[in-house]
Amino acid sequence: MDENFYLDTLAVHAGMVADPATGAVIPPIYQTSTYAQDKVGGHKGYEYSRTDNPTRKALETCLAELEKGQSDQQTFGLAFSSGMAATDTVLRLLKPGDHIIAGNDVYGGTYRLFERVLRPYGLVFDYVDTTDLSRVQSFLRPETRMVWLETPTNPLMKITDIRSVSEVCHSNHREILVCVDNTFASPYLQRPIELGADVVVHSTTKYLGGHSDLVGGAVVTCLSHLYDGLKFLQNAVGAVPGPMDCWLALRGIKTLAVRMERHCKNAMAVAEYLEKHAWVKQVLYPGLSSHSGHEIAAQQMSGFGGMISFILEGGEVSARSFVESTRIFTLAESLGGVESLIEVPAAMTHASVANSPLQVDAGLVRLSVGIESLADLIQDLEQAFEKI
Image (cartoon, rainbow, N blue to C red):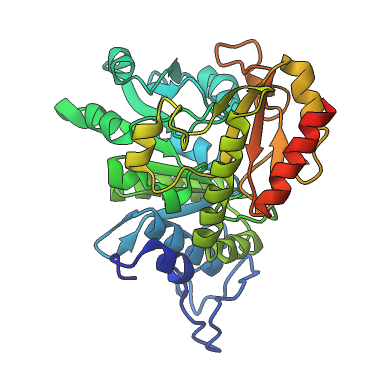
């Protein structure tokens, strides 16, 4: 599509081509594993659905256009069976001995993959406060091949200046890939490739799907040689999503803009409410002026997202009691759906970082603020505070 269209328009139309057989406005679900060939090697662009599938291709095209992963009318997006499968595929571009700088606050599953799966294969990881550019610079060495960023981070909501880190990594002819997990922000709020990053990763399970009814992942790049390598790995390793999950993701993306606006509006109001509450020691939300990364977030994001973390007085006991007392906020892992979720990361999504330098405060509560009535959400939090 025209790259000058606004993202609201792209979210509805990118990758959407009317079915040539019937004229159906929504591309069909191609629920097939294989494709007939007229002669040996004589197919219509598809031969086996691990390699390519029309429904998946529509999603990949859409994701690439949303994240600006395109060049010369080519789009460089790839869909995977989960966000972790996407992450693992990106790391497979490296070889034993290569050095990776990762943020010191990453998703627990990412840390587990890096430490328990990839480090034994010879990759070398350092976990650094990437909000401090001088710290990133000080850890660079000749073997450094990748910087892995989350911004905002999960669950401490730290903000990294993507443009500055990218400039440092790409200076002096360094061949360092800057990879950004953009799951928390979504392309509606932040587009890392436009800020200088090389690779963007998503769990499409979250805001892109938006309805807690699929599991998927994605990788987008603006570099054709990286795309070729990732495409080979996608096919060779085979961690691809089924056509139904691809179709659900495409359906979810169509409402991304309106959903993100409501997520952001509700989350800002909830964060302001929490910041004034006597039971709350600290609120971590980049939309608040009290947040250390507020100014950078305001520069590189068009909104501050729907994720909030906060620390309660009373520590772990209060946190567990609180999350078990809400009625609208559902106690569950994951995030980014239309419904509001609540969890204790130390015991749930980030249990894998326990007893490590990335260990999370047991009194930290994480909210995924949904699109329900704001008044009902505030009332739900208030009644939970009363119970503890």
